[in-house]
Amino acid sequence: MTNRIVDHPVLGKLPDKTPVTFTFDGNTYEGFEGDTIASALLANGVRQLRVHEETGAPRAIYCNIGHCFECRVTVNQVQGIRACMTSIKDNMAIESGKLQATPFKSTPEEWPRTYAEFEQKNKGKKVGDTHV
Image (cartoon, rainbow, N blue to C red; front, side):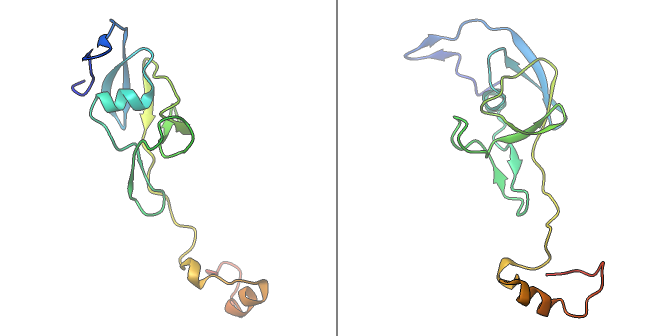
Protein backbone atom coordinates (compact mmCIF):
# COMPACT_ATOMS: atom_id res chain seq x y z
CA MET A 1 0.00 0.00 0.00
CA THR A 2 2.22 2.77 -1.24
CA ASN A 3 -0.46 5.39 -2.00
CA ARG A 4 -2.08 5.60 1.43
CA ILE A 5 -1.64 8.79 3.47
CA VAL A 6 -0.66 7.59 6.93
CA ASP A 7 0.46 10.93 8.37
CA HIS A 8 -1.66 13.84 7.17
CA PRO A 9 -0.27 17.36 7.72
CA VAL A 10 -3.59 18.61 9.15
CA LEU A 11 -5.42 15.49 10.39
CA GLY A 12 -2.38 13.87 11.94
CA LYS A 13 -1.31 10.23 12.05
CA LEU A 14 -3.71 7.54 10.82
CA PRO A 15 -4.86 5.46 13.79
CA ASP A 16 -3.96 1.77 13.78
CA LYS A 17 -6.57 -0.27 11.94
CA THR A 18 -7.12 -3.97 11.39
CA PRO A 19 -5.69 -5.10 8.02
CA VAL A 20 -7.88 -7.17 5.67
CA THR A 21 -6.86 -9.15 2.61
CA PHE A 22 -8.88 -9.17 -0.62
CA THR A 23 -8.42 -10.01 -4.30
CA PHE A 24 -9.04 -7.83 -7.33
CA ASP A 25 -8.93 -9.56 -10.71
CA GLY A 26 -7.01 -12.42 -9.14
CA ASN A 27 -4.32 -10.26 -7.49
CA THR A 28 -4.11 -10.16 -3.69
CA TYR A 29 -4.13 -6.79 -1.92
CA GLU A 30 -4.36 -5.50 1.62
CA GLY A 31 -6.67 -2.81 2.94
CA PHE A 32 -7.90 -1.69 6.32
CA GLU A 33 -11.17 -2.44 8.06
CA GLY A 34 -13.47 0.50 7.34
CA ASP A 35 -12.03 1.18 3.87
CA THR A 36 -14.36 1.17 0.92
CA ILE A 37 -13.41 -1.06 -1.99
CA ALA A 38 -12.53 2.07 -3.97
CA SER A 39 -10.28 3.58 -1.28
CA ALA A 40 -8.52 0.24 -0.66
CA LEU A 41 -7.82 -0.17 -4.37
CA LEU A 42 -6.58 3.43 -4.68
CA ALA A 43 -4.28 2.89 -1.69
CA ASN A 44 -2.83 -0.07 -3.59
CA GLY A 45 -2.32 1.96 -6.77
CA VAL A 46 -5.31 0.54 -8.68
CA ARG A 47 -7.20 3.30 -10.48
CA GLN A 48 -9.12 1.48 -13.23
CA LEU A 49 -12.15 -0.34 -11.84
CA ARG A 50 -13.81 -1.45 -15.07
CA VAL A 51 -14.08 -0.77 -18.78
CA HIS A 52 -17.07 0.62 -20.64
CA GLU A 53 -19.18 -2.39 -21.55
CA GLU A 54 -19.35 -1.58 -25.26
CA THR A 55 -16.31 0.56 -26.14
CA GLY A 56 -13.75 -0.87 -23.73
CA ALA A 57 -12.75 2.63 -22.53
CA PRO A 58 -11.25 2.57 -19.02
CA ARG A 59 -13.50 3.73 -16.17
CA ALA A 60 -12.59 4.71 -12.61
CA ILE A 61 -14.06 6.53 -9.64
CA TYR A 62 -16.01 9.59 -10.71
CA CYS A 63 -18.16 11.06 -7.95
CA ASN A 64 -17.07 8.82 -5.01
CA ILE A 65 -20.34 9.54 -3.17
CA GLY A 66 -22.68 6.99 -4.74
CA HIS A 67 -24.52 9.20 -7.25
CA CYS A 68 -23.03 7.79 -10.42
CA PHE A 69 -22.34 4.17 -11.27
CA GLU A 70 -18.86 4.49 -12.76
CA CYS A 71 -17.24 2.39 -10.02
CA ARG A 72 -19.35 -0.76 -10.54
CA VAL A 73 -17.50 -4.00 -9.82
CA THR A 74 -18.41 -7.63 -9.21
CA VAL A 75 -18.09 -8.68 -5.56
CA ASN A 76 -18.23 -12.36 -4.63
CA GLN A 77 -19.95 -13.01 -8.00
CA VAL A 78 -22.60 -10.29 -7.47
CA GLN A 79 -22.47 -7.74 -10.32
CA GLY A 80 -23.10 -4.01 -10.16
CA ILE A 81 -21.68 -3.27 -6.70
CA ARG A 82 -20.55 0.34 -6.26
CA ALA A 83 -16.96 0.29 -5.03
CA CYS A 84 -17.21 3.75 -3.47
CA MET A 85 -20.12 2.74 -1.21
CA THR A 86 -19.16 -0.80 -0.20
CA SER A 87 -16.88 -1.59 2.73
CA ILE A 88 -14.03 -3.99 2.14
CA LYS A 89 -14.25 -7.33 3.95
CA ASP A 90 -11.60 -9.95 4.60
CA ASN A 91 -11.25 -12.47 1.74
CA MET A 92 -13.56 -10.48 -0.55
CA ALA A 93 -13.22 -11.49 -4.23
CA ILE A 94 -13.62 -8.45 -6.47
CA GLU A 95 -13.57 -8.42 -10.27
CA SER A 96 -13.46 -5.45 -12.60
CA GLY A 97 -16.19 -4.81 -15.15
CA LYS A 98 -15.41 -6.34 -18.54
CA LEU A 99 -16.20 -5.64 -22.18
CA GLN A 100 -19.57 -7.13 -23.14
CA ALA A 101 -20.92 -8.35 -26.44
CA THR A 102 -22.67 -5.65 -28.48
CA PRO A 103 -26.34 -6.53 -29.06
CA PHE A 104 -26.54 -4.82 -32.47
CA LYS A 105 -24.23 -5.06 -35.47
CA SER A 106 -25.55 -1.75 -36.83
CA THR A 107 -25.08 1.78 -35.51
CA PRO A 108 -27.92 3.80 -33.95
CA GLU A 109 -28.06 5.97 -37.08
CA GLU A 110 -29.00 2.86 -39.09
CA TRP A 111 -31.77 1.72 -36.72
CA PRO A 112 -35.36 2.06 -37.96
CA ARG A 113 -37.34 4.91 -36.46
CA THR A 114 -40.75 3.33 -36.93
CA TYR A 115 -42.18 -0.18 -37.08
CA ALA A 116 -42.96 0.32 -40.80
CA GLU A 117 -39.29 1.19 -41.40
CA PHE A 118 -38.27 -1.92 -39.43
CA GLU A 119 -40.52 -4.12 -41.60
CA GLN A 120 -39.15 -2.56 -44.78
CA LYS A 121 -35.50 -3.04 -43.77
CA ASN A 122 -36.10 -6.66 -42.76
CA LYS A 123 -38.40 -7.67 -45.65
CA GLY A 124 -37.64 -11.24 -46.76
CA LYS A 125 -35.53 -12.14 -43.73
CA LYS A 126 -36.25 -15.42 -41.97
CA VAL A 127 -36.37 -16.28 -38.26
CA GLY A 128 -32.77 -16.48 -37.01
CA ASP A 129 -31.41 -13.95 -39.54
CA THR A 130 -29.74 -10.81 -38.22
CA HIS A 131 -32.16 -7.90 -37.98
CA VAL A 132 -31.37 -4.21 -37.72
